[in-house]
Image (tube, rainbow, N blue to C red; front, side):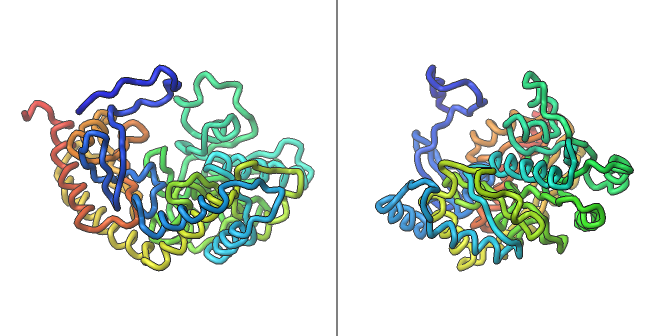
Amino acid sequence: MTTAAASPHVMNTYGRLPIALSHGEGCHVWDTNGKRYLDALAGIAVNTLGHAHPRLVSALQDQVSRLIHTSNYYHIPDQERLAAKLVELSGMSNVFFCNSGLEANEGALKMARKFGHSKGIAHPKVVVYERAFHGRSIATLSATGNPKIQEHFGPLVEDFIRVPINDIDAIKAATAGRTDVAAVFFEAIQGEGGVNPLDDGYMKAVRLLCDEQDWLLMIDEVQCGIGRTGKWFAHQWAGIQPDVMPLAKGLGSGVPIGAIVAGPKAADILQPGNHGSTFGGNPLAMRAGVETLAIMASEDLLANAAHVGAYFLDALKTAFKDETGVISIRGRGLMLGVELSQPCGALVGQAAEAGLLISVTADRVIRMVPPLIMTTAQAQEVVDILKPLVTDFLHPTKN
């Protein structure tokens, strides 16, 4: 692999591979040396439609030639179009647009605070989860359940109650007798925390608890939403509806976008002057969102994500069924993780050498979140590349 010199002018905040990508098509990308890679990362669950989808490219070229940005001093027609579609798909009420998942989650936390204050709670508490990841601003970092990335950034924001996932007794015990709880906030599938799905039954139980206690149920669908699991939003597998739903990543298929979708209980929390965004909801991002959802529907990408994801999961389980160093294979749709018995960050570079783009999260979990256009043949190719790499990594003395 050709090593590219690090830029002296860009902050050293990423552990980058020595690769510069130049272009892509479908589920493949090419680097500046002409090497081709199968993309099982999709820009971290962002490139929903793959690379250079002709309909999206045409729409964005048209939009760039008209308007890129205007600010929210004016009406932006595609905001209403995209908001109306998200309301239709979610069954919720209205939408605020921003630029990223972090901003969407930050806005959700502000909504929880304001909701609590409206009930006379001086210091509203939000229930959050072990291993959660909601962003890197001070508030979202505080809600995140990862001490490693919180280190050196204290003091963190207080008023969070942390519980383990999939344990309804734990959340009931942690909140018993409290009158200061305003909301419960979880990812339907934890992404950065290791691709940890919340059980459908657990999500139903938390929805019921929130109804009983008059709390907001806030579900972070930033990474697992927008069709990735085979439904528009991952919580829909549980047959529930949140009060607040942050979105981002796949909604713009590569163009930065974030959104907070609110249900009836939360729809009027934010009023003029309470919240805003200079770039949020600009014409280019809105066109990307409108076109992404339209293309997904016309190409039936939810069904594809469910079908290819099921094949992918089964193929991974078959390939690693006798591998003692593989602890768990889990996920839903095209959001899958393979947990190993030891930290495996080195596999990211090794996979790239073999022509495959993946990531490792939570130190030991190989994460695959490919474009939703991936085929079963491409899923099998990922497994075929990954299998010997993992085996050699876990048992280096065999060679």
